Length: 362
Image (cartoon, rainbow, N blue to C red; front, side, top):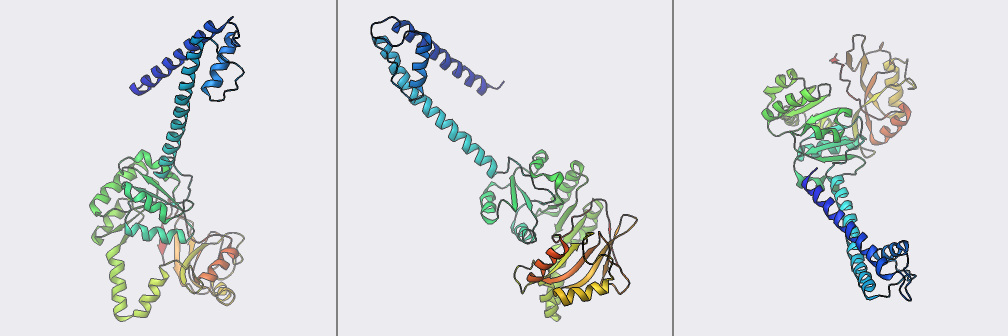
């Protein structure tokens, strides 16, 4: 039992004892007095309760000097009781709202993207992810960022948790075990490598993604068990080079990396093929023609499940590839076509990474 709890219990016991003593004394001084309406202990308790709660029915009143003095003490006490109750209620509500603001009440998000480390780069990633209809949980150790994140995103799309990065127990509040992907986003590659190794000891079965400043560490992170390692400098350098001698290709590639929001925007999308998909059992080329004519979408690849547990990504396959359930189709659609494909395929865009599956590119 803590010292504070002991102190609170002592105060509560003292108040209760004082209340019982005054009520009994009221009964003792009022019983049998001429004109007194308080002649039983029950009536004394009733008077004390309605007085302390500020109800004041007036059906019982003390007539003796001592009784009136006790009644006065009850009146003064009612102000204290009311003030105490209001302050406690206000304090509890404030604590609840603060815990909710800091994410300490947890989230029920599942198959969401978990981002550890918040900065401008992470903000751009989150914006793209939620535009694709996915939920995001953010873990940050910077309390000043909490309100800014809440202002920027809806609580339906984004959950934010304030905690120290070393407090891995707190990560359960972000439902880390139910997340689809964990993106570790630290400014220093070395710190990030050490952190990922420690994180994988606690959560070994999760899909990890990192974005590096130094591309030479890519193999090191892959060896450490990181599923996807992206180099910021490699992506930027390729785009810059492409702008130098193929500017239209660069513009097209850059637009493909953003989510199509408006009708004229284009996006490279990935959709799962379920058993109810109208293209199940069809040849890839036939589906290519049908999707282009009817829905203005261009098939560019297919990801097929293999017997050995691997997934084979076939880019722009020729005739003879049959679409089957559990395949994933890659296609270019604009914002308007994207809505139609979602209804036609009965699934949302994207593929939740399988922790036990390896991707092979053909």
